[in-house]
Length: 401
Image (cartoon, rainbow, N blue to C red; front, side, top):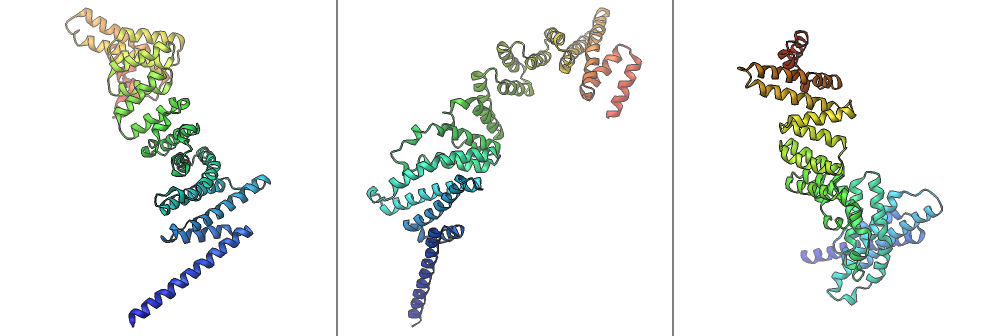
């Protein structure tokens, strides 16, 4: 008896639920006819499709698509009449239509159980999706221009992915759509801006086909690999970029700075020389070269280069520092062997005297960079018996402790 009542109760509940859904679907159809309360109609359809059994019903999906399409057409009409239309909403509706058409095709494939002849709507929906698809790309560029990189990535990703969906079987979009590599490049850029390497690298092989933006692709990739702490790939990309674009600032500066921070001055010198071969008068490169020569202990070459830079530009602090330190370091090295030789002591004093004007000028140009001029000037004044100047440095030294 109890079992009978349970079955009866279940039947009543099922019937009531079915009647409720039919009533809701009728409301949706009414909204489609009147063009009113479409947001509510969309919510109803999403609720209906949230139930697993309903997701297998193509007609239910078709009704959802009709609702979204109606909203899209109303928005287009407002644009045509030069009335207010929400750009973000229009692009989001495009995205919804594309996803819904793909869902319909997916449900049809499952229901067809491998029989392509039973897939009723593919041809029509492929044609329809093909007309909407460009707006996914434009949506991506729109959100990118607004610095909404997460949204932009979603649109570029859908634009790329839908080219490979079964609904476009026979279209060969991967080989015929010239915008795909560009969309992939933009997806790399969005992932880079979001600091999410997994997104930046998702469509990398396709992005590499965008030859027009290849230079910038390599820059973003280098930063992404550095974010991953993948120094091997980071350096490989920098070297490729420098080889392909030897005058592009990003590549040679990052290579030289990397090797300089690693105290690999020989490698830094190799790349600065290659860059200077292409741009012999480039100021940054010439200054970098003087720093490298200083650290390689090639003091004469460093001083000569600094003097040649100063002759053309007297306001570059770094070259005064490098020339001053070249003389200073030479004095320190000479001092180690000068204790028993009067002649060598004279050379030490001469080196300190030569360092003096460069270091003082560096102090004038970079007064806040005390950590770089204080100790050298302290030692120079001490060794040249410049009491007043030494006392000033001594006070500054004590103040920093």
